[in-house]
Length: 526
Image (cartoon, rainbow, N blue to C red; front, side, top):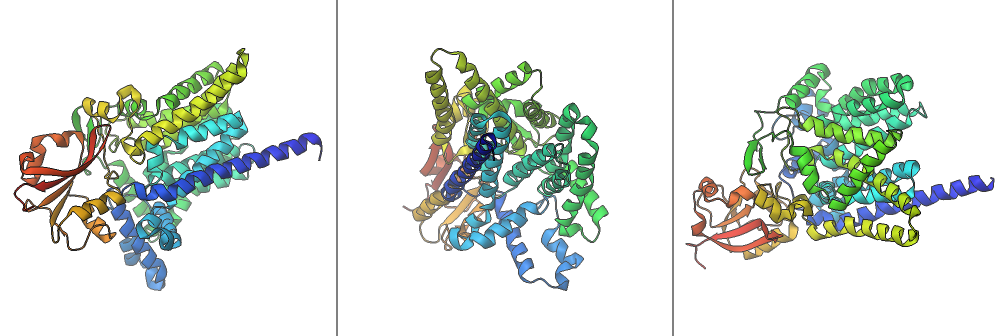
C-alpha cells in the first residue's frame, strides 16, 4: 500500500469512528431523553397496536394468516391506525428487546432515537465524503440539535422512521449511479419509506427531479427499481393486504388522499383557528420561526453558495430540491399542516445539510483573513454555541421551541401561534408529581378529553388506580394542556365550568407561557 492509499485508509477509519461517536452520543442521551418527553396523543394507539403485534407473533399458527385475523391486527383505518405497519413493527422489536431495561412504554418508543442517531451518522458520512469533515460535523450538529426535530426523533410515531428511510433511499438512489448494484437496494429502501406513511409514496418526485439534472442517461434502471420493488416491499410489510392486495392498496390510497373533511384536527395559526389545513404560507413561516437562528443563517448561506457555484454541486442542489418539495406540497389546497412542523420533518434534514454546506463555505472563505486561525476557531465556537444553546434552553420541551426572530414561546403566544400540542409537555416526572397532589379516590379530568391520556397514565403506572378518571363536569381536579386559545373563558364551556371556580395548584411554564396547568375546584374540601 503506497503512502497516499495508506493515508486515505486512515482517514476513512477516522470518519467511521466519528460517525460511530455521533451515533453513540445521541443514543446515550436518548436513554435519558426517552423519559423526559411525555407520551404524545398518538402513542397510546400505537402502543396498544404493538402489544397486539407481540401477541400475534407469539401465537403464530395457520389461523394467524387468515384474512379475519390479519385485518383485526394490521388493518389500516382512517381513525386510530391510519398508517402502514413498519413503524409499529419496529416498535414491536424495540418493545421486546428493551422492555426489561427501560420499561414497557419507553422500550416501545426506543426504536425512534435509534433511527434518529443512525440518520445523523449517515448525514455525517454523506456530507463528509462530498464536502469534507467540517461540513459533515456541522450538518450533523445543525440537524440533530434542532429542538423540534430532536424531540420528534424520540417519539414512538412515524416521524423518526420516515426521516430515516427517506434519507436512506435518497442516499442509495444517488449512489446507484456509480454502482448499479445499489439500485435494487434503493428500491427496497423506497418500499420501507412507503411502509411508514403515505408521505413516503411521494419520495420519487424529488429524487427523480434531482437526477434529471445530473444522471439523465443512467436514470432508467434506478427508476424502474423504485417503481417495481417499492410497492412489492410495501405489500410484503402490510399483512392486512395479503389476501386482496389490489383492492386494499387502492383503499389505502383513498384513505390517504382524501382525509380532509373526515379528520377534524385544528391548526391555530396567527390568531386564527383552521381545520386540518392552514394558509399556503404556513410551512415557510414555521421554518423561519422554529429553526435556531444560526442554523437558519447557515442554511441561507448554503443556498447562496449553491447558486454561486451555478448549481454544479449535486448534493447541495438535491438538498434544495427536497426541501423545496416539502414546502411546495404543504402549499397545495387542503394539504394537512396541523401539529407544528412534524408533517414535513424530512425537509429539516436537507435544511441541516445545506447549513453544513454553508458553514464549510464560510470556514473556507475565512482562509483569506489575516487572522485566519482566530477567525476559524471563532466560527467553530459559534457553531457549537449556536446549535447547543437553543437546544439546552428548551430541553426537554423541543416541540415548543421558537427562535429569537419571534422572541421565543412568549412571542409566539402573542402572535397567536400554538405554543404546545401533542401532550408531550407532561412527562413522567410531572405525572408522578400530580399523582402525589391528588387525594384518595379523587375525580380527575385530563383535558383535552379525546385522547384519554389520564387512563393511559394509569395504565403506565404513573397515576394511582384509585383515581377516578371522568369526562364530565363532576370532576374535582383538572389537568389541562395549555394552548393559546384555551386561555379564553369560552373554552371552559366545553367542561361546563368557569375559570373563576378553579384554583391553580401547580403548572409548568416555558418562557412565561403555560405548558400545562393543574386545577382544583374551589368548592372541594381542602
